[in-house]
Length: 384
Image 1: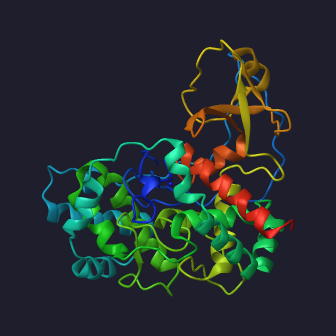
Image 2: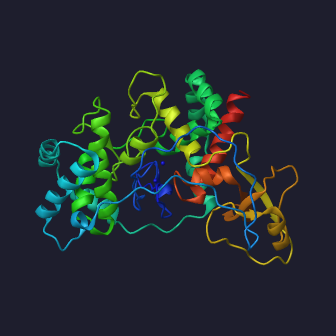
Image 3: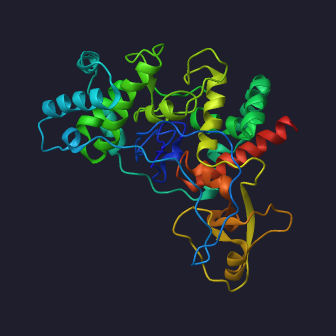
């Protein structure tokens, strides 16, 4: 689920906190996404124009939805007294989202500061685990068998969403498996307490969290079946089976069964449609590959791209000494990924759809784990 996605640091998702990310959709931990403003972009699939090389030979980046706005300094500047910042927050939320000021004040009066939330988000990051240690946390027999059972239980709904959006069902299941162990671990913090605490008592990330708190009030207006005081989630305020932050919930959640509401907490038709929609909005390409294992030519210089955008033509990568292994899928735009595997360094080419997974969580290891878990689930379920 985040920019937009955010690290994960909940027990049971230890590895997702190991690299700073930006949430997603999910924002279960330490480095949050930025927030939103405009109406949700259309998610209708369109044919992407053929890529054109830039002057440096790179391909254009994958188009992304607009960034989401953070709260203004009048709400987040720690030099302003706390009570004044809260009053300014009420004004900001009223003006931006049209929420009743009394409703905001009444809710904030019942919100609680939680020191354990500050402690959790301030905890020094653990040493980054290598891929050989990270992978088994998510790609293991228990997670695979759980995914196969979950897929079979919800096959009809999953495959209907996959047919409509082009996002394979196994990737939807894999996201839920990595994020919340198929809905079993969704967080025990009240969302309003988490966002209230981080908005007004964690200055470093206050612009993001105050923006998300405002989005929470807007979300409750749009989805009145949600009880703001009862919503539970991560210590960063992410909710539901797919761990959506309030802004991602507002922008990209979908009513998957036409019942007139979007419930991402336990209602699987909405969860499936929303995760798929998140991928589509961020550029998922139907039928396109995700990654390919690559070989490095003897003597080739080490190459570590500045970011994960799939902008490098295959010819350019080949000139550097990196080519897809025989039998691996090939797509024109890629980035190069290097991981410390069991047998030494592994090289992977991340294509457009891999980049889309990184919009959910910025860690490349997270995204490769989602891919490999998805492939294992698909193998266990069989062909659709």
